[in-house]
Image (cartoon, rainbow, N blue to C red; front, side):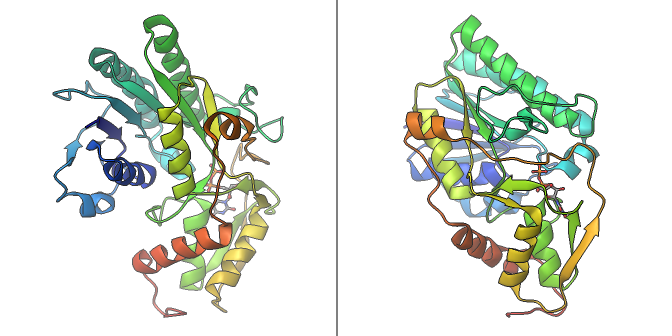
Length: 319
Ligand code: UDP
C-alpha cells in the first residue's frame, strides 16, 4: 500500500485528490492549516481507516513519521482575493513550504508533484499557452505574490530534480471548477452562481470580453493522477481548452439558474487581470493520453447542485 501526503487537503482540489487516492487504495495523510481550507470538505473521510488529518502550516518544518511514497503539494491561497488578503502567506507556502516538502521528499525517497498554475504565464502574449512559453508576469502587481511564488516553486522543484535526482512532477493547472469550491472565494464561478441564486447582480469585471477556459474537477484529478504515475518531469498544462468570454459565462449561469431577479452588472477590471487564457494541452494528450471528458453543461449542473446545498438564499428559485 502506497502512502501519500496531500497538502492543502481541506481545500477544493486537495479534498478531491484525497478521495481519488483513497479510491486507488492508498493510505492518505491530509495536511492543512485551514486558512482557506474547510474541514467540512473532509468530513466524509474522517472515519476512513486509511485517512489521517494533520493540522499544520507547511511553511514551518514538516514532520511526517514513517514511509512516504508520494507528496502532492496543493497548499496555497488560490483565488485573487485570497492572495490579496494573505500576500505573505501566499509567498511563504509557495517558497518555504515547497522547500520544506522537497526536503521531506528527499529524506523519504518520495516522488513529489507540485501544483503550479496557468498564472506562471501571467497576462499571456502567446495564445493558447504552451508549456514552452515563459510568461508575462508583473512581479510587483497584486497577482505577483502568487505568480512569483509559483514560478519559484517550479524553479526549486526543478533544482531538486536536477541536483538531487529527486523524482518530481509539475502540473500547470488552468481554471477549474466543481463541488467544494468556496462560495466566497471571489472566483468567477462561485460568485456568479451565488449572485444568480440570490437574485443579485452578476458582477462582470471590465466589459466581460476577457476569456477563460474551465475544466471540471474530475477531469483535472484524472490528469494529475496520470501525470504522477508518468515519468515526465517537465511541466504539463492540465485544463479544458473550451475558451469563452466571461460575459458568455455569466449568460450561461443566468440561463441555468433562471432567477428573474438576477441580472448582469459591470465593475472595474482588477489590475493585471489576464485578457485571454486557454491551455494548449497537446503535451497532456501525447504524454498522458489525457483530455477532458466532462461537458461544461454537465459539470456546471453538478456544481450547481452543490451550490444549492451551501449558498444561503432568502427567496430560493427552483426549490
Ligand atoms: N470575474 C468577474 N466577476 C467576478 C469574479 C471574477 O468578472 O465576480 C472575472 C475576473 O476579472 C477574471 C475572470 O472572471 O477575468 C476569472 O476570474 P477568477 O477570479 O475566477 O480567476 P482568474 O482566472 O482571474 O485567476
